[in-house]
Image (spheres, rainbow, N blue to C red):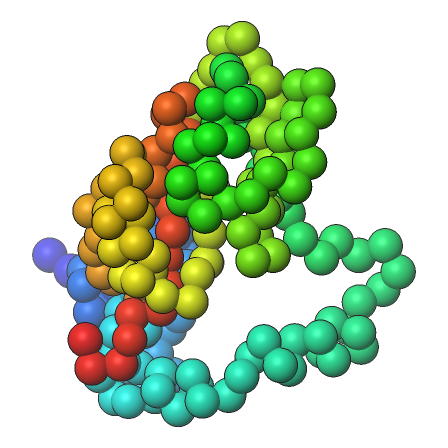
Length: 190
């Protein structure tokens, strides 16, 4: 028996009308022309790729527009970046591992390590007992970086895969078990 919509209890979740998965209400959008039908971000990106809309958006260089937008939109003391601090049981071993992945030692002192790769920073703090952490690094071309790491024989490089939310990703797992997810937009036509 189906109850009228006005008597259905609100669980805070909505079913995506495309993939059928239950999502929190804040992670779906109601289709304006079809009230009561929702779509998740992953399916919206899939639909945009199929319609060719993402290729048009990619032509706009968001990176070029961002500084002027931030200068207008930011109040003093507004955060501009977040950098997780990952644990390391041996900072020298961590620096050597990430050097093979293209990161340079930007600052290394007692109990702390800062690595850099073309403006991307990874921070590590020494801990005798490590509970592995996770972070995400956006790159221009995940496939290219994945191939380079494989060719260099870097340990801990996982398989690369396209995600339903529009990114191509792989995981780089360091000797302490930290998982650095590396990804980029899926190229058009793939």
